[in-house]
Image (cartoon, rainbow over all chains, first blue to last red; front, side, top):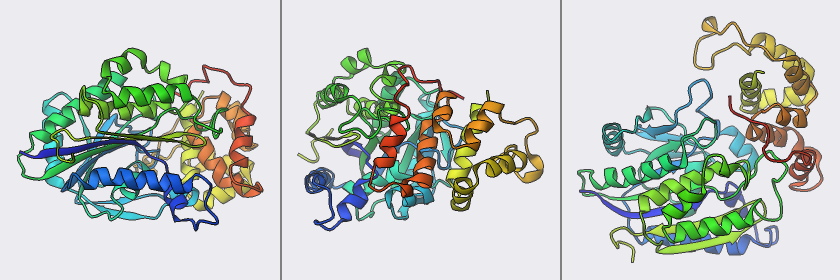
Length: 286
Length: 120
């Protein structure tokens, strides 16, 4: 069976790519520490020597639209073009071509449908920065095939937090049951407290540093029950109007189980806090 | 209320560089053209298989026609769509990075939780 060698849960920050390319005299004061932390985090994936990446993210109204909105969608294509005009325009993100892994996509779809997750699928998916940001940060060579898994954290009505945790657990079991000798890493990106298009956006810190500190503890300690006891669809409005992206972190907590993370780091930035977590379910990276 | 249609306008303009410039330069004209010609197009269907029933309310049309992002927030337009398009249109007019985004936020400062519902 396949080996799930690493689980990475991280924020995705579309400004990192451009910030990391600035010459030192033009870079903001936080850039050097940010790059250092990302490079250290990258090493946690490299150490696990993955062959294929299952990548959890969320389309930001690029290909998926309100006339036909899936809650959970699995890409099944030989290739995925990536990044959009408005991401080039706003963040300076370059276009990419990612390789797919159709056999693993097919396995996840079949096993997920049989396990009660009625996944939508896409045979022609252009992925956005929720998938490419972690490519830029933890696998900038873009040398591994991927299976994208999209969640709806963006267009209500949304699935509840419990469902994200359940899907994470299911993905862990599904990947571990894949009849293959490949080494799989599961990488998911979301947000801590975040405000977009509202009165609390672009402040000196994330909109709710207290929530961020608590969230980092839940994730780092594998405290799924504590997190679920305190997080609902309604409660996530309070830390910031885009904080439902935290449910992608909860999905990754479901995948990691009741286990402390093997690697924890964070960085307080303007507008939002960055956070980086890695688990090695089989001890592969330790 | 036709929050969906307001979001559809923001979405279809934001993804098209020519429409971004057209809406920046001529908001009322772009909104009138879009409502007449584009509002009922189903994005994944051919032109002859359009919808027949979509239109803005007067309040929505007015808000879009004068670039009133505060009214759009109050009406429940998706704030991510509004923000992204406003950055594309207006960030260039501000002298330093993030000034536009902070001005955008300051104009919304009178909104308290819960914010207007964005569910479509």
